Length: 470
Image (tube, rainbow, N blue to C red; front, side, top):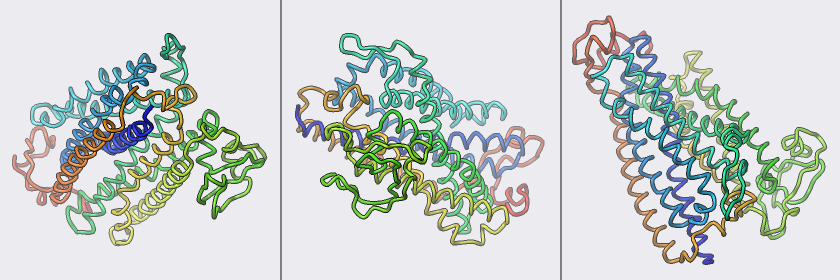
């Protein structure tokens, strides 16, 4: 085995996955929010909801396309760099990925065209249907991916036949407890990503004193949604920690920075893990709290990394710090959402420029939290690609050379950099333009029972239709 090829293949997969996940984590939440906006527009007839919808639909379309393009590469890598993984786990992973294509992707592709171009051609009530179906399709796609990844984290419902993992209980694979802890955790992360991106955009417009009616809707809905969902996300995060504690004790010990068995166990808040000395430098530790978090007990024995052979231990630094960054981002988002929602209820948020600036600058936080959460899950799983069953080194394509792996890595980095630059530039142009401009609104469909000209000037219409303060 070429160790350099193994390292470069791991870096390549980590790079492409990390790049790709930015877009689904954004579009899943945004698709659900667009459905809510369209429903509010139909229910109230307020044009402001329509303009916000049309504005974010353009951004959604670009991000969705970039997510599809960046995700295509993932399937190729299973054949080029990880053929042994494909051969051995194909009877399980193959159908799961196919189900995603035949259900989620077909739904999205079938109705996405109606979402983009069909509004003038269908009744308003019908237009809500493809909006909701696209949102459901993105959620279904995330579900299949999480089922697949959860099986790799905690393999169940299979037997080994002819050197391959063959499913013998699809119910366990699809409906295991681990799946229905990790899938909501990822789904909530996507909703929070959309919420904070929307709220940050609204805060930016308010700081610039532009599009104030639309900006206030973005800010209010984004912060209110986050204020409700962050506590729920913290709860599911705790449940995810429980499955790691029970099924992946080495990963749990790495996340905790616990080197030796402890009873009761303390909780390392921060420190610098030192694998050479098997200690933490400059650690700040809370006694007993580790047992309470790990086992809901004040005196439980918690396992340390030294209980596992060195070759069975995950790298410590990445899961240790990534987990703390993820939790830190979550707590900051919780504070911003609660404080911002309180100020909005009191009618003081637009005058608090510090809070607006903090909200605007918070838009990277959900992306960082999502990425560090995945780093914790995937790096902490090492040295296993299918935990406890198949080692990463044994899953690589035989005879893959370091030169070939390096070439593909460079090509992928260059292509993804171009994609990211193009997407970022175009989305930035849309954000700068804002939700203004002229919209074609047929009177009989756009705003039922409200007469208006076919060509509507948004600023004038907003002043006429929107309630005071919006």
